[in-house]
Image (cartoon, rainbow, N blue to C red; front, top):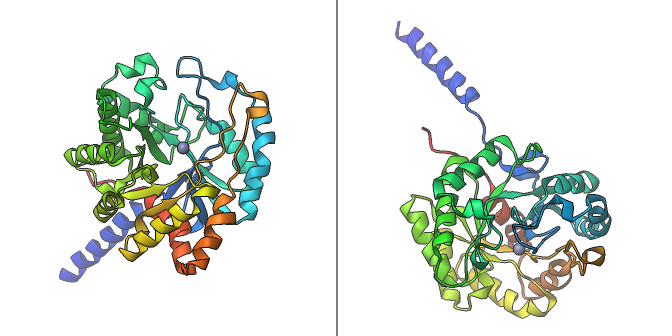
Length: 335
Ligand SMILES: [Zn+2]
């Protein structure tokens, strides 16, 4: 009798384990992908950014074939340098285009990850008026719907929550957007990437995360290179926050290298994310204006790091492991 019930328990356990939906590791524009397949990653780049404002932007502002023609050589260059995955950080109402990203993914064989969320810096210039009136819960519901049902019927799902706040103290609109991000994170497991800059708004956002019971490791402090007091960055890293030095340019080799060595010395390299914040096809400008490619880290920073004695293991940490840790979809609490 005991054996029979034991057998039933084992069968039930196996059934339970095999029926449990496996959360996808990261969500790309072509579907879920295991973090093992992400490969070398640039976690903060752009294809297209349209600064005309939420009231005037739209897909009518650019021709996808022309954008592809312009951008493709830069992406192929990145691919030839070994990059496999790019997080495209352009939010909705600033030029996010899931269909364009899918086209580029098919042409390059690279993985692209897009986002849901809203950019609430610049006093809401990039948020349509009707959305500004919504509550945090209502905004979160829109983002959760995109995560569950795809973006605008494209069949493309977001892989992270992208928000933006002012550089100074958080405005009321900023707070609402951060609260919405917390609610959406808890419902979807998507990481929160927040265009932030200095420490003051970063710490204020972490307070809101705490109120909502969101772990600091679900937060990417974007443009952290704008905070010059590195002790504050270290303190946040120790809490589990991902610290993004994401605006690399050739003239910033020394600054980035010093920061990497500083974080390594303090055992916090696993929290560091690097990228260029490059690209930026600009609709309305002839041929999309000045486009910046994605090769400067490879050309300038990595050789400098190797010269400074940074081990291959650390490079693996920075460009493979940290992006995977930051963007893997968190398991949802059992309801
Ligand atoms: Zn950016």
